Length: 111
Length: 119
Image (cartoon, rainbow over all chains, first blue to last red; front, side, top):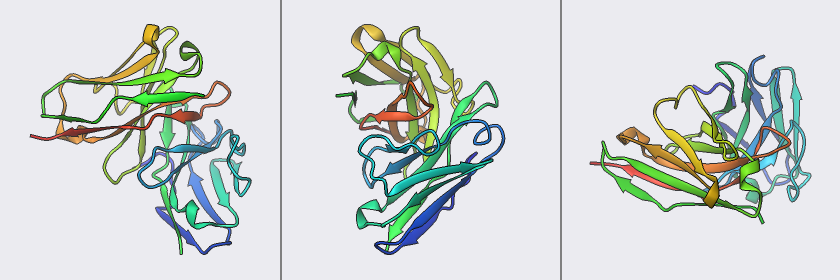
């Protein structure tokens, strides 16, 4: 059972907008910034969004992040087949001397 | 260009020891935390711990404390993850990743090391 809760799956058709949620608590999302990672099949994870809503250089602006209270969301607009991947939210948790925690991951299928 | 290059796949028997490595290049290795992340077959990402190569300050996830040892040799820009006695349940892909200096994010990742533990 992951500390951060994500839906196990999401789907959309090309061109659509999809959102993936990430729910936590006051000790993690409620007091620290959230990051999102994309893991394409057979590849290492890649940083997609950091500090709640910032995109690293090279990440298309079709990807956006937001946070409110103890929940965060990743939105993908103009969905493409290349976006089919697993997506993970992550943040720091201040409990037990502090440690990083990941969500369980959401498998995005482009129909 | 920042790169993290991990050692190759390993096949071990239960009870054996193992040390895998992660070599950083293209940045000041001693100035960034390096983390380790486990991914069991078909499962999600799990943060194991991090080390600051500059002074070897190390933090562990409560789930992995006592189960593994994280270390670093700053003279060769390499971080390590080791086990003293492997179990079948240690079978997984292990990634190292650099922690960003400006955020708690992992901004560069190694290619992963597959560890298989089987009798």
